[in-house]
Image: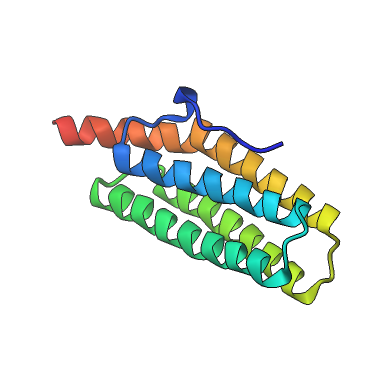
Length: 136
């Protein structure tokens, strides 16, 4: 069971939405790779991409928030750091094989749930602010 993009996740900012769609797709691919018992290198590749893309995406959001002096920047950055830490822990656990596939799938699923909740609550609020700033 994966995650699906729908219009309720749209922030109204095309670039952010495109990146969110990519993150959701990659989380789904990672879950599929683990449950499909793909080899360790394939799963490590998905995890590596996810780590790098999360950092790229969050940096882009944080640049925009800084540029437009978003009042929720510090709290938003703290949420990003929490998620980056979670993804890094997943990666480290997988490489060490200290966690079973079942535990990894549960952790990835909870990461996907975190991302969807973050989009619905935090990112949509931030995006509304940014859209308002760019129209004035």
